[in-house]
Length: 433
Image (cartoon, rainbow, N blue to C red):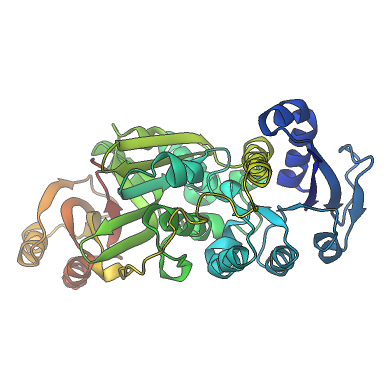
């Protein structure tokens, strides 16, 4: 069979890693696919003397590359929405297969891109867009295809996990750890996407679509970051047998789907609670197989390049052994998507950790518990902490309750004369099967 010809758009960390892996592992990849893979073009604006580019055409005109007749597969690893969107659309119109690691692009424009791919009988492969080297897309689309997935919860941003791990292990402040994460290259100069949950929300959007067969709906993901988490709350959670993780959660509920990213207390005995540093993990609850956990490196040249090249291998197999290049597995795991409603924040149900800083006055605790009781909120645990600056922190754990009820209760507690400062609310999930 003739070689499959490849163009790589972007030679940064991921693009350079994919090129090296394709070259270093060429013989093994050919054994897997039965075809030689030739890299004919790379799109880059900066020279990479550390890469072997002999015989490969280099150009900064990316649009011209995707139109080339001697390119079968376009690998987009540039990141960002534009010009990646226009380049992929042009590649699809010219009948090219596409591999991308661009979670933001897919989360926000994937519905149009997948429709265009279907209309032109090509694929968009995107394993590298979520959780780096963990093959979680393949797991959900293929490995768990016999199951009805009930929920999934993931640590899907390594930067946030590194920060929370350091805060717990060393009692450090958020700002201090963030600065170190930037020095180590884990966080960007502008860390907003990582620490405010936007990156995780992009990935959760994709996971939820594959899990439940719904359109990509990034704009409906409730997103909350970790920048307000304090070492004080991390310690109190630990004292109660919990750890705080920044989770992306997608869950079937009675009246729709919950899509949410936020700091979450989870029991310390849960395996996912012990995923530390920059590692990622996704816990999936499916009705037949039960809970399964997937763990590994969520970023970096090697892990992400591994996912990119795995997608290339799949595409080469499909175009070699099927009548067209459209593939045999639906792009978002289901032949037909369904418009299940996405619940608003106020409609979601979860447990809560509350920290209330109060003046030392008689009856304050009774007032708080009365408000919660009248709202129909059951208290699972309550702990009065040591006095801090003339205030007594009161920590309360609640059973799951609809968020709108908790909103009302917190507003009433906040209005009590003895309460000082804003009440801290962190959601709590047992992640029981």
